[in-house]
Image (cartoon, rainbow, N blue to C red; front, side):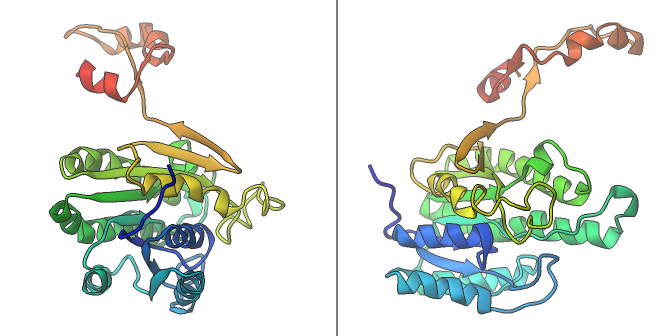
Length: 290
């Protein structure tokens, strides 16, 4: 059965280009009314223009869909609230939120300035908080919502020169893990996408020089569209790269019970078994185990 979003309203942040643009276009093509949000700044978050968001919204309209553009910065809570209020005034509901907005300010940790640490966390992590916080009461009231966080392999596994970006991206997984519990009774499902794609944010990174076709952003969008649908799971991470879709998870092993009197030496003697992930517990097993 085809996935469609007739009568659904979606907000996609950072949708003026790259991944967000593809997500917005496909949601619009499948019938969603789309708020195309983008600050219109550079990769580093500097600058502001509604032109990028307006161009994508016009693409959706030209294809027969319904969309409006919005240039709010996700770091500005008042601006995000105004965007949400305008959406409610226009369409009366918000069903889908794709937290996609992001910036890069890569430096090795030794050279990283505090300003660039906070700037990246403000957009990725606090920006996702702001948008989610504003739509949450609407979704609980209507007893329906689909929220997608955009995490990254840089957060899940680390990446040289991206301590700020990685911290923000793994923070979104922690955010998701709590929202999946708190939203479940309201039929609000929160998931995460971990994309690898050739966009303006990655074009200068090693390994992305000749990846425009095989790592095209539109190859990530099918997973995002699925996570926005009625068929979505809850609290899962889907990775997407070049047509491959796979899952990531936070796991723990069975471990070793050293008793109440355990010492550091006991830990040292049993460290191989403590670190052995051969027998690990999945999400459901972890919950039951505790």
